[in-house]
Structure formats: structure tokens, C-alpha cells
Amino acid sequence: MRLFRLLPALLALATNTAAGQPADAPYALTEAMIPMRDGVKLYTRILAPRAPARSLPLLMVRTPYGVSGNTPQNVSARWNFMTKDTPADGYLFVFQDLRGKFRSEGQFVMQRPPRANRADPKAIDESTDAYDTIAWLLINVPNNNGRVGMTGVSYDGWTTAMAMLDPHPALKAASPQASPADMWKGDDFHHNGAFRLSYGFEYATMMESSKDVQQFAMDAFDTYEWYLRLGSLKTVNDKLLKGTIPTWNDFAQHPNFDAFWQRQAMTGYLDKVTVPALHVAGWWDQEDFYGPVTIYRELEKHDKSNNNFLVVGPWNHGGWMRGEGASLGPIQFGSPTARFFRDSVMAPFFAMHLKDAPALTMPEALVFESGSNVWKRYDTWPPKAAVSPRALYMREGGALAWSPPAATSPTPYDAYVSDPAKPVPYRQRPVQMTYGPGSTWSTWLTEDQRFVHNRPDVLSWELPVLTEDLTIAGDLTVTLHAATSGTDADYVVKLIDVYPDSGMRDLKMNGYQFMVANDVTRARFRKSLEKPVPLTPNVPEALTIDLHTQAYTFKKGHRVMVQVQSTWFPLIDRNPQTFVPNIFEAKPSDFRAATQRIYRSSTRASKIVLPVVTEIRP
Figure (tube, rainbow, N blue to C red):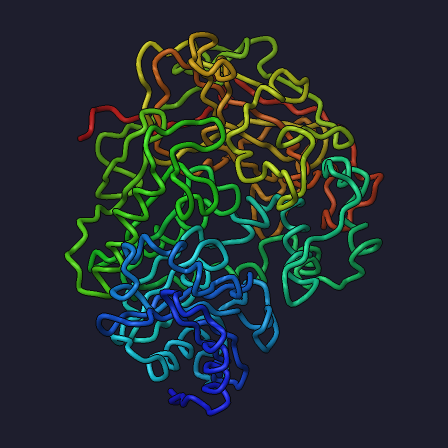
């Protein structure tokens, strides 16, 4: 690997920048354009304590969102949990703009896949850019101890995970947090092939309209109305984008799990644990819950040295890195969970690996069990001991029961009409832009589901009031026996904790319907992710829906509910319910109302399987 030398021009730039900095700031800022192996230079900010007590490790964040906000004045406030208010004995912080974003050179490529030819010395990806940056930093940043850590949330978490594929030898610890793993199966842009319309459109236009970050200008506060008026997905390029947004073009050209998405998915590359890794997820992450758990699980298959760890808490996207974490929306957790993570898990993890601090006693999986509101330590995730899968069956009269239907009734199903012209909103209207002023995007997963309960196009089943606590810990799966009068359909399933109808201290929590887990599946992919096939009208088929994983206690006096619906708009694009090869090419005439039937008979028993904790764990 080539050695990097600090050019005189870079030294002059750093000197000029430092001259304008506040003399009392605890950190000094150096700016650099760091050359990569192909000659592209990446803008980087280095914030070093003014009077380091010793040689310090480097802690790096690589991001597409801009690094100029990292200043000598505020880096202490943002990262004080890592330094314990003692910058001199903390870290050399490094923040870098990704290729093609803000002040870095080169071309930005959304979720740039790993390089195809690893033998090509000029081939680049996020792993090589991290490698080359570290090599430069070790030579050119004074007072470094030769060790580097990487971390970041969301896209920054993904760049951290990518750096772990072929790490520089000096990368000694990494914490990829809320990193996407597969943009088609379960993260930002699709869930099980169902396109996440509002997020996909708004994020792609925000990231690719310019080198910085700019929101698309919508002429409606309620984006539910805006997307409904927009019509079919074909109108996006025809009327608005005109092919100018590369990621939207990829959406439209690759609706199935083809080679494009397969090459981008991380699971195919996670074949070894290269550095100690702390994976972090939030139970109510509105963007990337699937990713960090999937990355952890894939690496765990190869973890022979106990260097792969998982933390999951009661947080939304990145919520562990800000605030106290004692609540999310109206849901209370009884303790400052985010502060606990930062102070007692993340800080000691990096200090142990980068500064020879005392060892952190870390379980394989540290998860917060909401409902009972306690942290649990497990030696595997999902846990194997003390957990028994138990099925809850959808029964007649809107009931859930632990026993399957005994016999076929004259009407062995519940039915509703799904009309794509009148889709079910995914959160309470008005649905503001994802990152727009006043948006409830960050907490929508905690919203009271009574706003759709008893709609004619939403089905609900529930258990009687619990007479004792019901605790689950592990994976959740749903089997729906479903039929449609159309030739394609979506099915959204929600697992809900229904609070007592009275007696709650906070009056609005009486009868609250709190969504514990959820997801959507697009039925065209039930047989093949690569080659979708239509449904046969009015012929029931068994569909398996992964509700991922959860640790939760449904408290005595609460009820367990399951809801099913076929639209979730505009989070998920409207399925025409008429099979077309590519929904991005669907015509207005393809969108038709369809009758959906969810079967609950002895031969076609729809159910949710819960990982029920069968004994008390310490």
C-alpha cells in the first residue's frame, strides 16, 4: 500500500484554519484533502485535543451528510461521554465527507457495492477509502497511538461495516450502528420487495439532487395527499425527475431481487469477524432495524474469538446517541437507556480496545425488554434457553387463541376490501415529509393504532385480558392463509400491545394500541424473490411473514392484538392488485380494488408464533 505524505499545501491549509479558531476551545481543527489510491481526494476534519496527555487513538466517522458541523466548540459536547470531560486523555476525532459529497472529490454512489475485482490496485469502494484514510492519518496526525476505531449511525454505520470487510491493520474496534444490510429485503428502500415509497423518493432526491443535502420541494403539507395525487410510480420520472436521480432510476429498473440488489447486500460479504464489533439497533427504528441485527447474525456464524456483540434498546433511529432515552413518544421506559448505553457500553468498549482500559464485561447480546423495562443479558440471540415458540391463532369473532380452530366454519375467513384509491395511512394525518418541519417520522412506530382500528379495510384479532405477564424474547413469524380477488396483493401485519381501558395515570394511554412489531410482504415474491409470479384469484395460499425479533413483556391487564391490512400509505407504494411485470410501469387502469380473505379454519389456520419466555431469567 502506498505511503502518504503531508503536502505543503495541506499543511498551509491546516495552519490557516487553525489561526481562526477560538483560543479557549479544547480541540484544534485541522482540515485535509486526503488522497485515495485512485487520486480522488476526500475532505476530512481532524479535531485533536490542544494538549494531549499522551498518544491518543483515532476515532473516525465517514458520512455523506457533511462534516462541517464538527467544530472545536461542539465536539466536546457531542462526544463528552467518550472523554469523560477530559479531552486531553480522550481521542483524536476524524470526520470525513464521502466521495462526491460536500467538499470531497469524486462521484457519489448510493450504497456503493464492494469492488468486484479486489486484485485491481486502483479499484475502490468504501472499504478501500477507509483503508487509505487510516494509512494517511497514521503518518500525518501527530500524537496518535497507532490504533483506530470507527463508528456511525445509519449510512455512517454502513460505512463502518464496510470498513470491516478489508480493514487496515490499525482498525482495532468498530461499532456499526443502525447499518442497513439489504436495501431490498428489509432496510430503507424496500421490505420484502414492497417499495418504501415516501422514504425512497424523499431520501433519493435529498441525497442526489446536489453535492450537499437538499429536500425535494413538495407543494402539500400532507404528503398522503401529495403522493395520492401523484398517481402511479411511472409519473415520477415522466413528470418530476426526468431520469436525473440515479437511485430512483435503479428503483424503477430493478423492482425484483436481481443481481443489482444482490451485489449491494452485505450478507454475501460477511464471512469473517475482522475486528471487535459492537452492533447497535433500536426496537422502534423507523429506518434500519433489519440491518444491524442481520449483520450481527451473519458475522456470528464466523465468530470464533468472541468479538461480535449486539445491543438492542428501546430506541428509534439513532436514539441511543442523543438524549436520555427514558421514553419514546408516549411510551415510558423507566430509566435513561440511551445514556446508559453511551456511558456504560459504548465508551468502555472503545476504551478497552483503543486505550487498554479495563475490560468490559459484555454479554453476547444486551437487550432491553420493554414492558417490564429491564436490561437482559443473553449468551446468544435469539436466546435458546428458557424460550418456547407458541402459536396464537386468528379465530372467529375477532379473537386470538392459543388453540387452533377445531373445525371449519361456514365462513372460514375474515374479509375486507382493499382499495388502492383509498389506502390506509401508515401514520396519523397529516403525514408530513420524512424530515420536514414538525414531522412525526421519528416516532411514528409508537403511534396509537386506534386511528385505523375498526376501519373496514383493517382486520383485528385479540386475546382476552391477560391474567399474568406474557414475555417474549426472540424471533416472530406469521403464517397467513390468504386469498385475493386480484392477482397481486400486499399484506401488512402488526403485533400490538393494547393497554388497559382504564386506570392509566396518563389518561390518553387508556386503551392505547402500541405496535410492538410489524412488517409487510408483497405476495408476488412468495415463491421467488428474483422472478415474481401472480396470484390465482380467490385461491388461498400460505404466506410467511417475518416480524423479525423482539424482547417484550405484555403486562398483566393488557391484551395482545394482531392487525392485518393491505395498504400502508405512503410508506409503502400502492400495489395495483393486478399483477404487472414491474409496478414502476403500472398504468392507472391497473389499480383495482380487491377483496382480501384471511383464513382461520382447521385446515388453513392463520397464526403468529411468539417466542414465549417459559421461566424467569436472572
